[in-house]
Length: 158
Image (cartoon, helix red, strand yellow):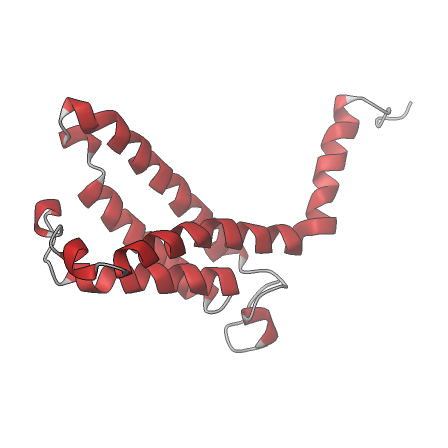
């Protein structure tokens, strides 16, 4: 008796497993684009008025000089992830960046009731983004990355 009847649940799971082998590098590229884009968009917005962003740091419990650094880190980190260049170090930096941003900006547990739900959603969205960065840190940038074009430099595992 065949375990892979057409239309069966087992057949469907086997089909989804084959996506890994056939499309892994393309899907890893797509994942890098999707996760890096939010950092580029957010960082570029902050860079357009960096002084105003820096002025918000004290209310977040952070020194204002970080407001002059964070937009560059956010933008550059997103760009590095998308390009697949220095991917693992960039992912580690972006995990730390997002962790700091989450606890300093989206502290829903200390927010006024009118802002608590919005901060709750943003906090857990950031946790999900850190999960994506962690996955890229572990799996590497894939074949379609600048890291993969520099064999031996960072020992990428496409």
